[in-house]
Amino acid sequence: MSGQLLREARRRAGMTQRAVAARAGVTQPTVARIESGDVHPSLERLLELVRACGFDLDIRVTTLDEDAWTMVERGAAATPDERLDRLLAGLELRGTVDRD
Image: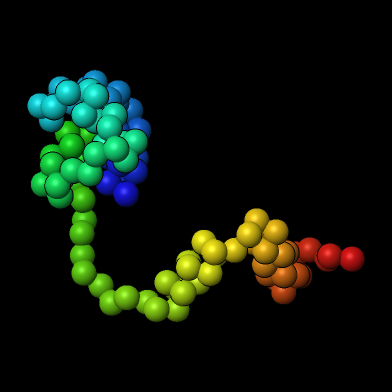
């Protein structure tokens, strides 16, 4: 997840890995390994890298929405066909598509 955050910040800033690395005082391969998920930086290091892109992280503790989490788990466990069926069923309910 930290790699995805860093990649998103870097892309939004229009920066290369080399540019982020130079600003943060690390090497380009370090940035690449973090973005690929091979390395999991500390929160402090991730914050430094994101700030090098000109962004900040807004981290808050919030109440866990069990219903939403259950939906995510079900979606992750579903096959592609099951996901498609659920999507089509939802569109049918909205009157957007007719399966027949």
